[in-house]
Length: 497
Image (cartoon, rainbow, N blue to C red; front, side):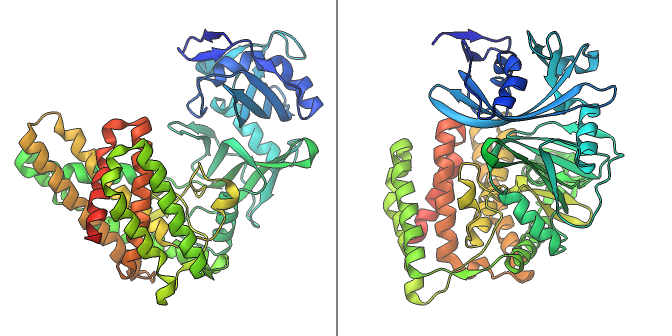
């Protein structure tokens, strides 16, 4: 199939085929827009491919507002180079597009009920995002509905503004009070994130945003999709990843390299107290999840199967990352040691967890830490993300994040110095990461969670499994970062000697 190049330099397979829709009415409404949407879709940061060959509407809702453009919320199946995925689109349609929205422009509708109208990304338009919130609150959003999470009313007289920087989702803030999170790749059935936040809201957990409700739509055949959720917005928060990297960088610069850094408390490696309180926050969330969802003790067979899955992932990773081959026997021994836990009378409990915990999923405020984004690992099917897991999987993910923060800070300073200073700085970065990893575990234990250091075999196996996953990811997408997970693999493999 031939390919055309858009103004963004992205290949779009042509012609785009609007396949028969799952819902005929959806095809009638959205059909004329599909040829206009396809080139734009292939350029979105949240789109997983680089081309579009077919679009199939599954569900479409049109919301009309007095004196406002029409808002179209659609779920479409997209095919590209033999693979298929599902996406949520929020489109605005108007006769004349204001200059402030030109950057959000998609194109002009060639025919149909909106012939001649300009179509644009509605998330960029505060007026349409306000219309969406009001329609949901008044239950006048067509096939869209908001499943409330409690008795708290949904405030609607708030000024919307889109958040930038999102990767896989889009987000809109309303008056620094509400956050509308829109899943660009919606999944059928209940949302694991909405289920968790609903339960944590009922538990009155103070370390997570309060959920107001989840946004759903019913597609053809009665299949429901969760399109997003509305939760409490945490104002004045700093991203945990950015905070950790900033503290690590200031520490690695040090007064000997930057005299002004001596005046900054962070220059002494002062993230350690924050790592401690972050560990406490994670333990508090795990405790609340343990109350809200059933815990179960894993049988010996469950643990053995988990260890076997780790070994299979390792074997597959070695074929992609040959540097892992030398560590394979040692890592396999770590996984075997974990697999023997139940046979030694060491119980392993499983419960609902965060599922993709790292520093970027934590927000720091004056009142402490909040954990956010409970979607779980995106590559894992939704039904698997809802399964109980040992809490140390979350702990291991956070510990790996400290290594990345330290190495990121060091890399940002290496360009201006020679090899000797770079080596010294990386050693200091490793020490910074170790110090904060220990502080995090101590904080976790202080808040009532079981001390992770008392479950060394389990924790090391989970860390190694995560590092192997990271090695594959870096080899595929960021080869220059491959030394970071390989250093962790080297450290963990040494524990079996």
